Image (tube, rainbow, N blue to C red; front, side, top):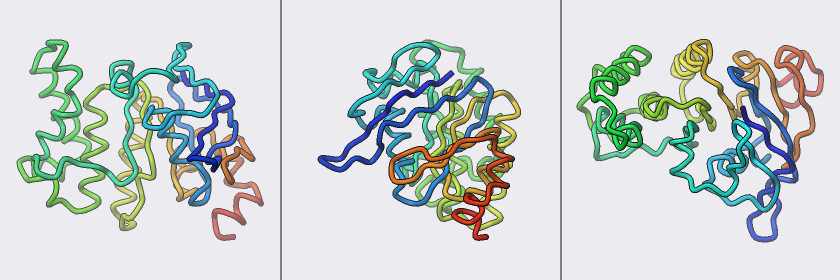
Length: 238
């Protein structure tokens, strides 16, 4: 579904991503792990076209997308859950979710289907239903993370890009978020997960890539990466 070849991302003269190549198959959950500053978020931003790549190819479903505007990627079936959440703070939970479906509303799709998808998000995150009319800026960090995941799902993406979904969350909230990520993947969603918590990321994914200083240094099945002595020493605290 996603094939990245020779991707480079630069900030001025600083190379944040150094000619990396990787792929994600349809229906797969793939983890991209690494320390802070390894280039993971820059990679996702380049895939979502929030950053212009300095070089390389990004193919989605066999189509080159490296020159498409960001908003068009939503219609193509790609949704990003950004680091730092980015809710619309003065809008309610329901209004935020409707913003996630804006591209579908423009096509004249039946409003009943959009309403049904909101209920599906509420089934994944019952806490959001309890606060449906609450302003999103008043939610806790964990509730906001639930909301941005739900908002991304409202576009009915084929490929979900997740950037550090556990950042700043308490352990119980992190567990809940990852339970939903696992559920969404089991329902057939293709997921590329960027996550500093390597153990969690590798436990829910099928394959993983290890990124260091802008380069991919290791790739394997997630179960094997969990057993890899280098990964265990560098990322699992052993």
